[in-house]
Image (cartoon, rainbow, N blue to C red; front, side, top):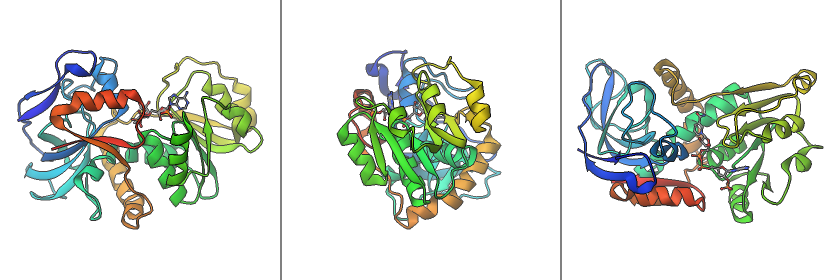
Length: 322
Ligand SMILES: NC(=O)c1ccc[n+]([C@@H]2O[C@H](COP(=O)([O-])OP(=O)(O)OC[C@H]3O[C@@H](n4cnc5c(N)ncnc54)[C@H](OP(=O)(O)O)[C@@H]3O)[C@@H](O)[C@H]2O)c1
């Protein structure tokens, strides 16, 4: 088969569309003929050598989410059959003509979605559901703040939280990006380059924050959380060693947590897939949540797709297509 291979760590041009071994399957794995693969920020971190693949996952082919058609099933597969159209959460290997994955990480593609749209979902939907709605326990009527409202994570979080009855506040880097968030269902956006989100929100307060910034956002986040508030981290791009005033956590009875999806065990991902299918797929089927695709590229132009990702001008997902 052909795959996009990280030929050495570095800038986007290290990504080459070249021959690679077709994955073999066994047990409860399925082989997917990939139709589309979603780009995520962490693919760029992996390409640079800053986000190693977990043990047992091929490090040279990036790609955490795909859509496609099952062309082979291992002997222990029970929920899917050859010919099924699925999208899947991967720990890597998605930028390829074929990928193998255990069946519990696959979901049927909702009828209304194209392969391109379906490939945009797994990484962000699994991350948002697990962190905002499970770990953060966001409830209807509560207020949630998404930092990076315009990120892949943000556009997913805004729509799901809005559809389930929460007030949604986002930070974004330009007026245009903020407006896009409003169109998706955000109630308020704060331009983090010209406004101080802590000042803007200190009177109102928020119940749940999804943060990928870390650094000096930690103390600001703590200050704007309401009593019993939950602060959930999914990255710390501005630094993970931070000052925390434990008294503020105690006095407001806050929860500070976080998680990483890629390294989680299979049983958790399988459980999460079922929860996503039960809670999020109906929102897609009823039109309350729609994938937002910014641009598609052929797999052979993965380097160009990564250049666009790193320009940070996109609003919506960038997808590689067959
Ligand atoms: N822990 C996990 O399991 C997990 C899973 C998936 C993703 N993630 C993490 O989640 C983050 C988002 O991923 P993605 O692929 O959706 O990213 P993405 O689309 O590349 O977006 C990154 C976002 O960060 C925003 N940003 C940068 N500096 C900011 C600041 N100082 N304040 C507020 N926002 C800021 C950018 O906003 P502007 O464009 O408006 O400037 C942009 O929207 C990444 O850091 C990724 O590693 C973690």
